[in-house]
Length: 256
Image 1 (cartoon, helix red, strand yellow):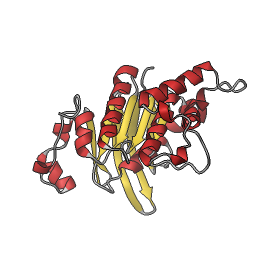
Image 2 (cartoon, rainbow, N blue to C red):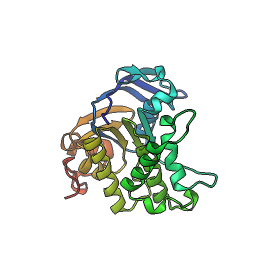
Image 3 (spheres, rainbow, N blue to C red):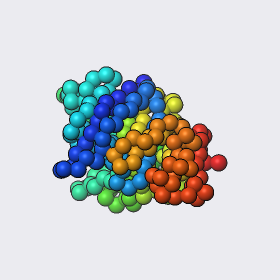
C-alpha cells in the first residue's frame, strides 16, 4: 500500500463572523507522519475537519494526489481517506468485528458483498491493534479507550492511503498511548500510509512525530522537526509555559 500526497492551499474556515482558521498552506508527501499541535481553540480540529470535507472552507482548496477534494466521488474518496474522530457514539447493538467490518464497505463487491479478502482484512486489523479478543463484544459495553481502539481497527481495515486522526489517544492509558503511536509510525514506515494527527499532548507528539505543525489562533506558526518548532520562545508565546516544564522529543524512536 503506497501513501498519497495531501496538499492544502490558502485554506480559511469561518464560524459565523469569526475566522477560526486562516491562510493555511501545507503539503504532506507519500508516507509522511505529521502532527497538528497547539493550544485549545487554535483551530486544530477545525482544520482537520476542513481537510476531511466535513467543514466547508470559506476559501482555499484541499487536494489529494493533486485532485481537489470535492471532485472525488464518495466511494473513491473512502478508498483513499480514513478518519479517526475524537469520539465515536454507537447507539445500537454492534459487535466489535461488525464495527471493524464497516471499514471494508468501500472495497466490497456491489453484488457479492463481503469476500474472503474482506474477512482477512478485518482479522488482520483486529490483530494489529491488539483487540482480537474483543471481536465478539458489544461496542457499547467497551470502555472509551477500547472503543477508540476499535475505531482505529476499522480505519486500518479500510486500507486507505491517507489517515487523519483527531486525538487518537484520548481515553487511553499510557501503555496504549505508546502502542498507538508505535502503530501509526509502523503504518507510515511499513505500509506507506500518509498520516496527519491532532494531539493536545505536545510531549507525546514530539517524541513520536518527526514533523510538527504548530497552530496558534488559526494560523500556522511553526512547521518542522519538534526541536525547531517547540522552541523556548514559542512554548512561552503560544502555550504560556516555561520550557523547563516540557519534555520535547526528537520525533524519533519514541519515549527515552
